[in-house]
Image (tube, rainbow, N blue to C red; front, side):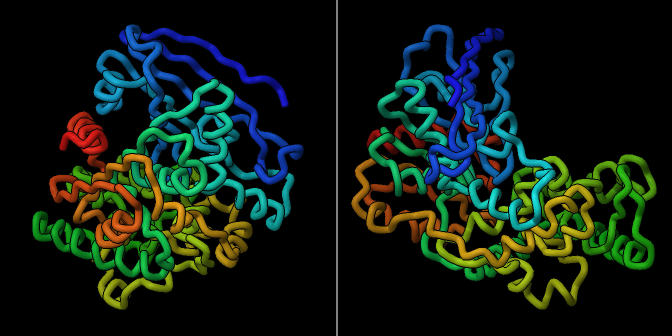
Length: 415
């Protein structure tokens, strides 16, 4: 494989070192094809020798945030840099790490086989390759949402490489079936939908009026797609965020024929930008299982009877037809729904864990069910939990410095 490459860039208040490391596409075949993995080292100019904190972004399918120094962003970064250098990893398939788009030149079966290499287990092994390439003996990890799932996989397969693990909104449901997970998220999401309508009563009739209109005649969108009635129901996706209700109300108050509404409604779930999110979302919950479109199968009858009940983080098979950007991966996604996924976590290893683990669990999070997160915490030796209803799923983005400070104190036995 070609050697690791590194480039240093300076921006106000920060020193950035860009690393590109070749890794095997299939870590079980180290002599097979390789892909590049990109990671950006972020440091305070006075902290170039501080220990590393690996940041694992939520997703799947989202690259790491791009840091800025003035003002410092993301919001948790300043607190992190007080103790660490931060390594922001573009997880494979995202950003500058072999981004997945339409996978041309492959049959659907070949695409599906390729995509089986893009789950948390491969991401952790990529991180290990980067750690070794940088000559780092151990580091800590901060996992947000899906990044927290990756952190638990890290504890399962390479805990000797970790000093501490911090998790925000992402303690996964270890050993739970996808059907159990989605049944819980549907119930939690419905609570947030009803809370939104209690806050903005006129929005229910707006949604119903849109449903009637779109059922009769789908709305043409920029780029050639059409907004169907079922596609629009994904507008409830953001209700799991602290600003989600405000953003939904802002969308609904726009005239449906306006350019602003059409533009904002064009990619409600971000599938066009991040197709991996649609294709591999359910696989994140497949801890030794087949998904078979679990969210679609477990959708409560109430959602079919009442079209004002908008959907949440639920991927339905019809998105492969309604979202044109997913068409190149449509048949591969159908194959992956029947794929028997291997386990992501090792309960025996987690039970004897010696790495300090501190997790923020959000009591009303509709994406990662709190009762399952608490169940997982009890199964991880030494894990400490901060259960709170102060935040929804985006707590790290909304109040990151305070949350990270508390988790660091918990891991060190100071809180």
